[in-house]
Image (cartoon, rainbow, N blue to C red; front, side):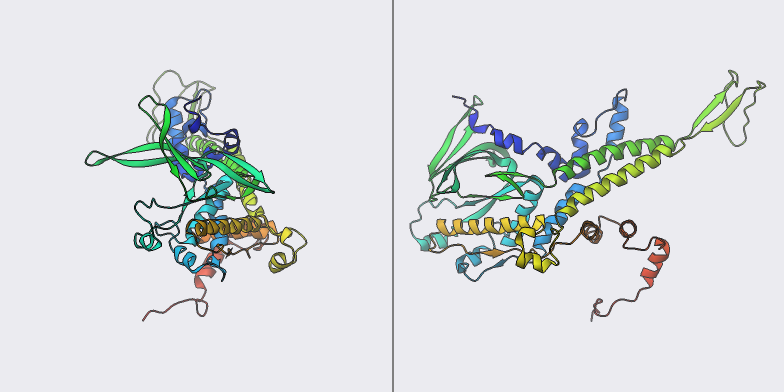
Length: 458
């Protein structure tokens, strides 16, 4: 028997997680990309270690992936999640603090949706505090014991087993990687890695022993008739398997990171002209406003050699093309399938024609419903969890509208300048090509505030 098998990831997890290191580095921003070193920014053949280090430490990330994930995942949560009337009153109360850490249902599920979009899948585990010495509902309530939600990062899932009966597929085993922090002496603490194995009606906790072998540390029964874990998918590939619809955007963003470094490097070289001298003899050359360099050789020459700039312009255009491709990938998730004349018609008459993000949101609604059902089950509430509604009326009719919408939201949150937004509007034919930004910006400053948009304080 393999003592370490409990800690190993399954083949399905290995296949699904190929893009996750790239995704997580991009979400960590410039600092994380620099820390990744040569993984995302290769060293040139012949480039010295010092030159590479200098290039790495001046590289900056264009945050296309992280901003697109933020903007897209925020759309369904630009309005509050609503609970239908049949949702139990007790659940209404718990939804104000679903994780027992102060997060309400809206904010908690918004975070899960962000994970699902970036990684392709995320999950929610319904847990319950250990009720030692508690035997009645009144005692449970007095001690604040009740079910709560735990966000499960996709990288915490090591593997699972499932079974299909009566057309329904359900988990029979789920392995989760956890890190617990325990006290160490009077003031210190230590992080301990463990694997929690959830089974039908029971659980196990495995930890390493002194010989670095994984052994059973704790086990016990649970009050659940099923494993209380619910997956939230973006692009669903199968049971417990998902893929990020933005994975290609992540790879393009890495390409932009590398290309931007090349561009910065060539700009650095181009800005420093090289002094070239020919047939000047062997005497030291003096450079300065009050100095002269003389030679009696007929072919003598002394001049500064500068870059023509052609490669710089080519590199700049390549970066702009990459940025356009990245925006399009994100914008495509918002475009309604052709054939629907309006967003309301899409929602009411032709759900199959929703934009991709709207379909993801429908799946998230179903997952939240399932989580609420599990909370009722563990709390022995004789009712179903009911239904939640997440905002979905945000589809657009074409890529131009979708990409400009993304740009506008980046401008509002301060990650895109007014001038760049103006230029992008011109490129899309929304702003007349002859409009001058400098003149337009002065006209904007001269605008009077629209009635009702300015609040006057007392």
